[in-house]
Image (cartoon, rainbow, N blue to C red; front, side):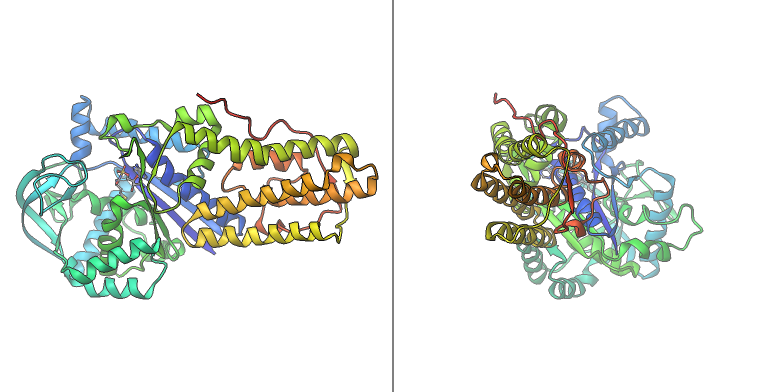
Length: 501
Ligand code: MSP
């Protein structure tokens, strides 16, 4: 099966921070998990490079918008590389292929009769790139809104209310977690939808509207189209539908709750109008906060540089912390202390400790290779069952849009193997046949963990696999497989303990 995963394309207006890293790491964990299950996977992220917000940020930096976005998006791309995220394509909205596609997309809506010219008068938050009609200040940033009155093209969003309600009602997994789905449904049932203003004349930094270059497309239309443009053929000639279809069915968008309306209401309505299928799921994360406030560029005190954290706890440490601590949909207040404590207690003390005790003992007592056959002892059978259940829980956690459940199941499995190791006290076993049987169970348990842990701690699990004599083409179907011979090498610590403070 083909599985297409996207993150939001992040505004190329500032430096990437921990909030961006979180959504991207969640998406990457899904990508890795589905790849292990044998799916063809693609993860797309990118940069949102048009609009007034970017134009102003460039001006403030004394740069031409083009040079400004080149530098900003390079910083995002570099960070994803440094965090070990498997980005298959990085889409920039200033790219020629994207621009050509966005214009074709517009023409599809127009052909449906869903675009008309009018005038927009209202208050706008440039930071959000969004109109807020009901208040004087931005509900997100708390700053005064700017008033605009200008000619604008509109999209007939109002037409799609019933169809949206029907789609969400009949597709339980369309918005995860369920609380977010209910929120959108409640809103749609209680409110009429106003048509959406989809062009601007007050900025030149955007994609010209086909047939009316005095207007540029509203930056959100431009940005949402990136989920498709990245799949579409280059240039104007290709057959969009055929190319898009190969990946688009079964698409999952990972987003933060701040951009839910754009993805749960505007985007599906635009797709319906264009005659395209809707994505399979929106997986909506809550906010990471610092000192109780949303981590955001507009709040400099909240900005946490992911690199400063990886320097301290490693990329696996940061990834683990975010995936395990943050239950999808919930807000979590980040603290350095919590990070260090989680990494030490889960990874260094639990998994890391088990792994090094096992490899040292096995290499010392049994050498680099030894035959191992399964024992019928109840403790061993239990451990195998626990591990097989863990595999299922991990899958279920991902399917439910909550990889924190999966991460915890992985951790508990490690704890169960640890308990088995302690209980069997192999360091006291003199009989070599029995020792092989006991260490053989631990060996197999660790082999299974080295597959299941790849979405959460890929660097360590890759090293563990080498130490366990496994190749790096891990697959989910290895779980539970018995090896006639165990190959064990002593390896350095998988997770060094992090000093506090
Ligand atoms: N450019 C738009 C998205 C267009 S998608 C077609 C945008 N960009 S953004 O740079 O502001 O990124 C927003 C996304 O970053 C959020 O939806 C979320 O995925 C992630 N996060 C940004 N700050 C975050 C937190 N403090 N906590 C969790 N996620 C955060 O909106």
